[in-house]
Amino acid sequence: MFKSVVVIGSGNVGHHLGLHLVDSGLDVLQVYSRTEAKAQPLAGLIKTTYTTNLEQINPTADLYLLAVSDSAIAEVAKALSFSSTLSPLVVHCSGATPQTVLSEQFERFGVFYPLQTFTKERVVDFKQIPICIDANTVDDLKLLEHLAMQMGCPVYPINDEQRAVLHLAAVFVNNFANHLFHIGEQILSKDQLPFDLLRPLIQETATKVMQASPAERQTGPAIRGDQVTIQRHLQALETWPIYREVYELFTKSIQKS
Amino acid sequence: MFKSVVVIGSGNVGHHLGLHLVDSGLDVLQVYSRTEAKAQPLAGLIKTTYTTNLEQINPTADLYLLAVSDSAIAEVAKALSFSSTLSPLVVHCSGATPQTVLSEQFERFGVFYPLQTFTKERVVDFKQIPICIDANTVDDLKLLEHLAMQMGCPVYPINDEQRAVLHLAAVFVNNFANHLFHIGEQILSKDQLPFDLLRPLIQETATKVMQASPAERQTGPAIRGDQVTIQRHLQALETWPIYREVYELFTKSIQKS
Image (cartoon, rainbow over all chains, first blue to last red; front, side, top):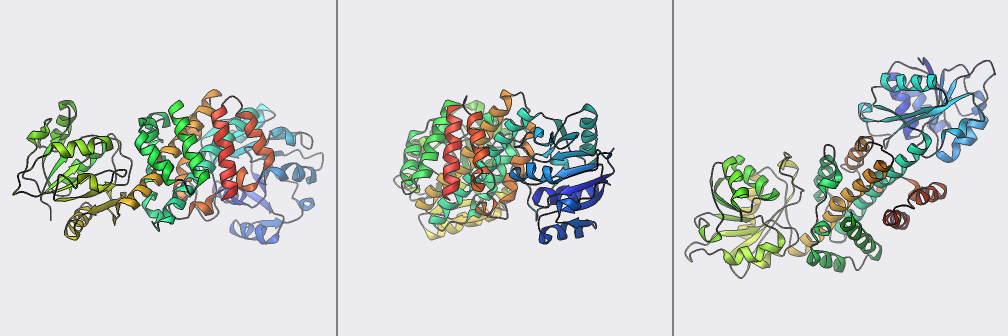
């Protein structure tokens, strides 16, 4: 069982993990961020110390959580140096990076990837956050599983290849879905219609697939083969060539499915 | 104020409107559907009569709600015949059809379009359903506004042109978003990963735009310009040419926005 943790990175993921680790009874020894402006608020919230210097990371923790951007993981890992007698577990929190990026620097390494989108201002319900874990030993995998359970999260052992697949799927259902919402907002704003009109529909579209499979929930002109409506929509999109392309491609893809 | 209504059509929209009209104190005189198998269950639920013959529609109601498919509206309207002394209001419930489709047959006509996706098995919260109304007279527009308010719904006067725009935007945020969820499910299933892993992310993606604008909430490799991840994802999509096209188009569209 882990008792003490150092959280490296205080972006959206580091912020929420840091807060929830403390809420779950862990001792967060220290917070790191490149800038004081980001490190200090989080350290203040969870009443711990902070540093902006990777060489001054507290070396006595059981677990090091690297909640930094994908491009920074390798670099931060290289800069961390623990005395050889201490061999803590070092994990990153990314969906897109293999765990092996940590294998050169550390004896014990792994992944602790919360599959969720975080925003600092929004409260998140950790009971709803699947944690995807991986580690280079079975013992450490068990420790990470226990930690996720202690945090109240559903937990899944997921290897590098599976995590890459998950991350790709997450881009479709999160980033791309949000872009569709943005397109909807744009289309309405041209006619000065408020986005509020679409919000309940967006919420229900998501809620509908909480129990059912999206395949069973597909509706609309494409799946009905309603050519009259499809043609009318394509015409309305003439001023937005790229949204028209999206419309055509989705209509084709839905009809193929 | 309307007292009595006839609901024509017992699909998802007719079903939920029928139930909620009764809950809101309206007298649903009759339900129509082409088949007894569909008309009878709804009539049973709201304890009223039904018919499968348009010529036997009860002519004494204040309001006739046409909750039938777009392609059937004109045809059903033609088949309805009221005695000349009675002049009830006839509205359809569609986002995609102009109200003028009703102008030949009826003196008083309009639209009562609930902007939501309905499934029979799912309870819907009418307080969350924007009703888009239109009518050929100001008096009838006021009557429809009052009805929507009586049903506890937010109500918006929306003309034919605006409603067409709304319906187009709804296709993007509902039908196309659901297709993205379907793509996510497909991608996971190839590696035997459960869709449950994505469900909390889908829910949060929708909930995030309930307060904020989707433009402010865009994240992911496309907007970060993270070429390493984008290339890795495109490679992983080689077995799905059409999903690869979707990925490329969204990446381009997000970067353009």
